[in-house]
Image 1: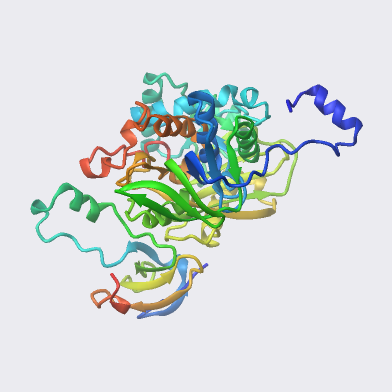
Image 2: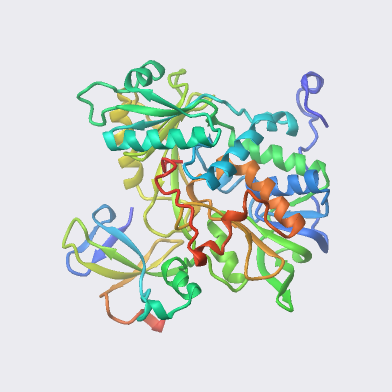
Length: 93
Length: 415
């Protein structure tokens, strides 16, 4: 069971949260201008790393706000949480 | 050595101390025609059918841990083929037909038990979806029946079918050929049969990289040294993304923990597999008497081979509502496998952006039932360099063309 630090409510049980998948996935500005491969990349292709993962969580049973987290996908340790819209830690993306 | 009643008696006379090893522990050679990465059921089945159907016997199966130690030994053993869409139905039905004779063919008892598989409907809409799926199955020549609540009650009397139940049972679909097969036996039987045909099954051999020349894969680096290969097939389930990134491309796949658990053993009480899509739980009873149950994936990406407590808590509370008789059972073991979920809940079997490198992945939560069929079509692909008509629709390219095979929910989800 994960203990997740909501930036607004503090540490709460994982069951209160909804997982939102990889963070910093940017929708192409002009979808009609990109190739099928680029569109597929945006829709379906994800990094799925073994190790640090930048991901979105929503405190759906609490304050209902979205935020980002950096979590290790092997140890499940959440290394930091940060606000949606702020740049990814370490310039990753 | 052929397993038979006579071999059992003969070895019984020597107190079962002289059984030969079921398969060799060969040294890794310098080169093979085909190297298969991943010694789970799908990888071993691929090697077995390469040797048996295509006479390709210069094959190595490289396994990071031990044979059957990954998802093959971490599932709920369910075998069925009642998928909605034609492409998926054909592939899973082909696989189900291979299960029929596989024990005899491998000379290894896989304990395939056609005990019948029920998918419960708890709402009118769910019953409509179930009726649609049953009809689609029958049009594809797959046995499938629509049961009324009364018929479900007769088949599974311990199910709570009272009108006031938290999850009222309005009916179910039934696939009589569906059931279970012993997962460890599948890994061992396939490893032994492949080994008997000359395949090298090399355990504790982790792949650390792919070597390429002019864009074509020429071999793999492993913890036991470099091995050259004309073709490489990767069948590594939850680790597929890691292997793909070694080869320099990405996959439309995310890895999640999928949990299952068994209770203490009890007397025979449940002789069918019962699944409920609405509460996302499924249960059967093993030959040892344990209730074997599973649920949906943990929501987050993970490689940790363990899951969060909230998933079993939810599934078990639902199962106890469905089966009040289970309420005082204690759970003995819990485990998780790392499954490779695909956006359309269907596998990717075939070519990759790297010449000579083929992937068989994306089976997500439901790969076990497809073990023989998956190996059969992947062996065909590795032997000929092109997909068989059964796996042609399951190309990586479908995510670019948009020709997805959306089995999310269509197959009753719970695997």
